[in-house]
Image 1 (cartoon, rainbow, N blue to C red):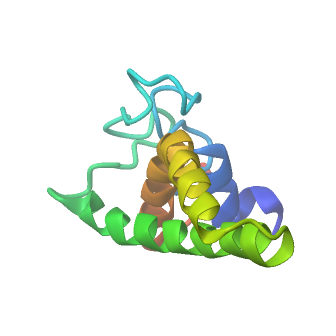
Image 2 (cartoon, protein in one colour):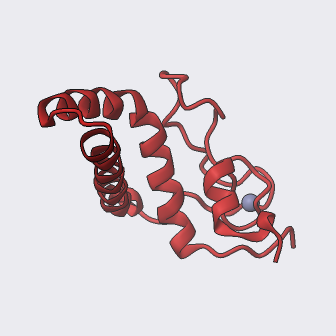
Length: 124
Ligand SMILES: [Zn+2]
């Protein structure tokens, strides 16, 4: 199995979970703040339905929560335990990091969520 066939490829490259060819979001730049959250309705290459059902992406909130907690623990360990920052400095810097990384976490959570339900099948 090559890297291109893994779900990690689809998540990192923001590609269709089924064919790993079509784009998942309308823009590849998460910091295009007018369009970072706009998704294609279907895969432009294989036609996989990205909407699936009403409210499908509510589950991505739990993924986002998990990613945020994991990221928070990692930042805490690096800042407070390894670099000697105070807890208050950690809270301020972590809040700023969360704001700056929000588009990345939003998109990653949706990609992780759909990749748990749609498996790679190649290009037909
Ligand atoms: Zn596709």
